[in-house]
Length: 370
Image (cartoon, rainbow, N blue to C red; front, side, top):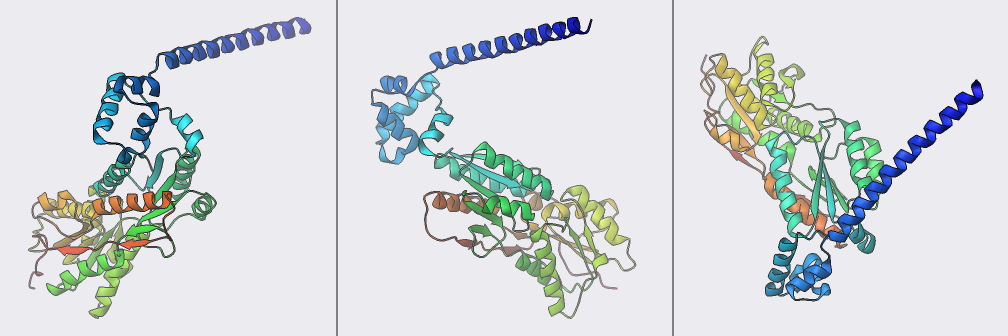
């Protein structure tokens, strides 16, 4: 009986393979039919009344084509629904026309604003942006970066300078241009802020109002050079004033409104609650504001709160949040310019530090007299 079972297995296995082959052939046939009906660059040229070479120049180097011809070609592309063959383009040029960016999260307006400006500037130069996030996980960041590189990108943009060794090995062994953002790293293309100075000027503002008891609500510090630098700036300013801040007055939370509420709740539970709270970003500061209001704590009458980033939210809550303005849209634009410069092989690596400034609103005031 054993040989019969083997023959039966062979029969069904062969039948399955034939079924798979049939499916593949059907897909190939469908693809060929789609390609046959798909508009070509010759169709676009014929409709626009120009040569195929002119169409190619409009698609790749529009600046060298007269605007009248550009319009005719673009109108023909829209009318025909023409789409370039990205695979063929990559084989011919060696470029994919894509730039990858890996950010901690896209669920935060501060990163969204930068990504929007990055995408807009790259799009104007004919590049598309591929976005991945890692939710503050270094291992996920490595996987995301590797996936983008393997997918096919011409350059990579990362946030911060504190990354897993595996990621540095990956990017340093890759020929792709790398641009770092939000922080400054010598010897690399980067555009960012002096995050330490941001923490300092927020603290100096509160000190000038007369505050002497502080609390900090920070995002996670592990593998987050930006958050760590802001706390270091707070410590610098306090040290200059002959003060300090113990670790138990620093509450690490998720970068969210809920994190800000939880952080303030933790700081209010200590023996001598702070009169001033510094949020590592505006979301944390706004969350602290909401928690204070839910407890009947007057801001700034009983508690001053300041954030960092200058999100749109900070101007519209009541009271409006004092904050440190970080020009994140400008960061996105300048990062794209660095990418584009590197793609044409321009010059040595450049470090671009953007200016920041204090914005005083209604959430900070003098401490309540005791």
